[in-house]
Amino acid sequence: MSAPTHTRPPQATRGGVDIRLPWWALALPVLAFVTLLLLILNPAEAHAAADEPALAPLLEWLRQLTAR
Image (cartoon, rainbow, N blue to C red; front, side):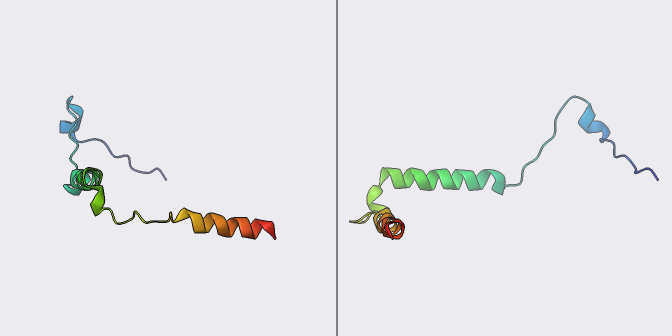
């Protein structure tokens, strides 16, 4: 049995491409960009900066694990 084929609507084949994005497809990247830009402009608000890097304990643990 053959499957039915779907054809494009006539208005889509007349030369113009009609693609519509949902509102969040543009809003989310803009929000992420603005958030990162604000963190760059005011690094004091970025509370991730600490006295000791978070990677140091992990590397020390891996060194001890491989030394055994």
